Image: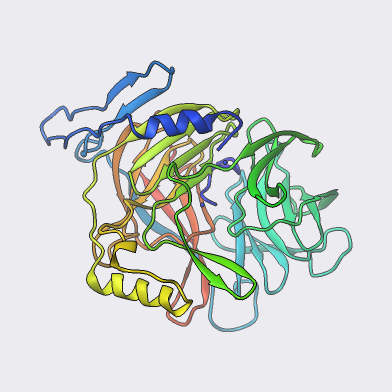
Length: 406
């Protein structure tokens, strides 16, 4: 996977797409449920007058019986005893290199730990400090097309570059103090670097800035927003007004694609947007879903929390249904992995996979709920972090059976 193919990582409105996006949200009609007959129904694909391609998927994916991907655990690195390199305290980020080795940034020790594809420790790189190859407050790891690992260090205001042997090559100034976790930046297949920044005066806003390989800014991409804005509840506090997120409100979650474009999920509508690197809307993708109601207990808990901070709220400030989408990840072939909201405690137990054209392929059962970050999906493996009952983190890698390369 190229380094831009994760969520999520990350949860970018672009130069011109805002009006295009807004006009699209009201004009699409969800398709009806697909049947189980063979061959399975495909999506309805149309081209709108704007040139945007509309993909209306049926409820049943394209995979026939036996074609779906199966995820099986193949590797787990971590321990609760000893003081070796497999004892983790806080895994800030991880990446997998072209040889299948796993690079883990251990934030408590402030060092990079490299493990072979079989889990054996290779070496540890760096330490806390301000010198070449040392770390301050690392927020992200990204491989570029030349097999160079860029370590984005917010604390030291720089990017440290390493080769595949873990040798420090150079440092580059990162003049951006803004921080978001998980860090949503990346490097596209042409070698451009993307960083999330905050710009503006009183009305400050997030933007994704595109830099070339020499870290010269070449473009600014406003971050995608929900078409209804960011719903919030204002509370008068000493010295001003605070805004709190509205419970169960829809959001715009996004993740980068290989070319520097974006997949965007409008979470309360089960609507996906495919944006070009220039910010144009290329595709709008929909799929029917079954709304999950907000229970009375969940509503009361949300309202009590808002009242505790002084908000004047009523039951009508909480919607009847939850958003359709909990999270979004993108793999190295630009498949969108959508984690739907399910009843009860089932959310996170599976993902719905769409190909790069927005065609719904089917569901993948997940052995464990995916965390917000880090998650890396490349070739035939999914690498992430899990915790045991004591809160001790482990690196865990799953084989994706049935996926090309598996």
